[in-house]
Image 1 (cartoon, one colour):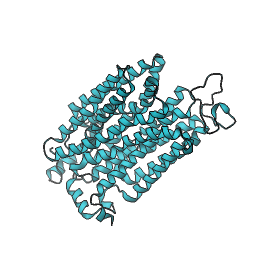
Image 2 (cartoon, one colour):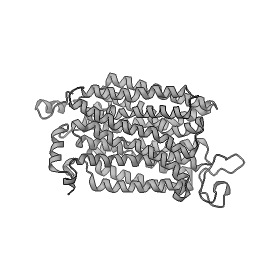
Image 3 (cartoon, rainbow, N blue to C red):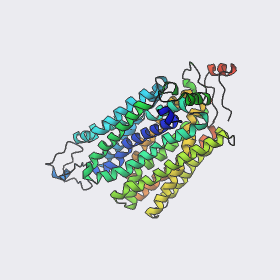
Image 4 (cartoon, rainbow, N blue to C red):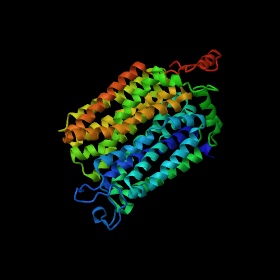
Length: 476
C-alpha cells in the first residue's frame, strides 16, 4: 500500500532524516537557552553557592516554590555548554561503523542513548554540576554518529542528480532544530504549566522518541534492504547512483592526506567555527549588547536559523538542476556554493563586530543574511564528501565533523578568555565576531584552491576497476 502511495520513497527517508537532525539539535541547543533560566543572576558571595548540589524546597535562595535554580559561576556555565561538544568530537568511530555495519543500526542505538539522557538531565543537575557535565558529554557522544551516519546512508541511497537536494533536506534539520529549540525553550521556561526549565528536556525527549519509532520502522542502511521501497524506485536508484566498489578497504593515507579532502576539512572547520559560535553565543550577545528581553530572545534568534533552512534547500535543488543540465561542472557548483556560504557570512560577521551602535532590528536582519547565505554550504563542501569518494563518505565526514566540532568547544572558551582580558562587553563581542569573519573567509579561499567535484581514485584497486570498465570516475 505504501509503495503505491509513495512513489518517491527516498524523499520520505529524507524527511525522516531531517526529523532526526531536528532532534539532535533540540537536545543540543536547548541547553544554551535553558541554562539562562536555570541560574540566578542575583547570587553573591554572602550567599552559599551550591554549584548544582541537590536543591530542595527548604533552600529559599534557590527555590521560589515552583522551580529550582542554581548558583553557578560563569566558568561552570561555559563548561556545561561546551561539555556536549566534547562528546560530539568522537565522530570517526560512528562514521566507520556506519560504513561497515550500516547507518540504520548505529544511528538508532546512539540516538536512543541521547534521547534517554535528555530525559534525565534535570535529575542530573539536581545532584551536581559534575554529573550534569558527564550527561552532556554522553549526549554529545550519542549524537556524534548522526552526521557521518546520514552521510554514509546517502552515499548508498542518493541518485547522482539528487545528491545536493536530499543532503540539504536532511541537514536543514540542523537549522530547524536549533530554531525550535531557541523559540520553544524560552517559552517553556517561562511557563510552569509546561514544567519550567525542567519541562524543556522532557518535552524534547518525547519528540525524540516519536522520531526513533519512525526511524526504526521505515528506514534502512541501503535501498536494497528496505521493505517499503518499490522495485521501480530501487532500479532507478541503482542505475543513477555512483557505482559501488566491491571489497573496498578504507584508504587511510588518502583520507588523511588527499588535497581535495583536506580542502573539505578546512572549509568544514571554518564554517563550524562561525556557525557554532553564532548558535551557542547569539542568545547571550543579544542579551548583553542589545538588552533583549528573555521572553523574546528565543523567537528573535530563531529567525536567522529559519532563513538558513529555506536557503539550504533552495540552493541544493538549484545546484542539482544546474549540474544535471550540464550548465556547470560539479567542481564549479561546489566551489560557488561554498564561497557564497562562507564569504558573505564572514563579511556580515565583521560588519556586526564593528557596528555596535546598530539597532536590534538591523542586527537581526544582518543575522538573517549571515545564516541564510550560510545555508549554501550544504550544496557546497558538505555534499562534496559523497562526490569525491562515496564509499569512504562516512569516514571522511566523521573526521571532518570531529575536527570542526572543536569550534563548538573553542567558541564559548574564547568568549570567556575575552571576558577575562577586559570587562567591556562590546569589545568582547567585537573580537569574537571579527575572528568568525576572518576564519570563514580564509576557509573559503583555501577550499577553492584545493576542492574537486569528481570521484577520486583512492587506492590501486580503484584503477583496476576503472580499466575493466566496472566503474568510472565522474567527469562533471
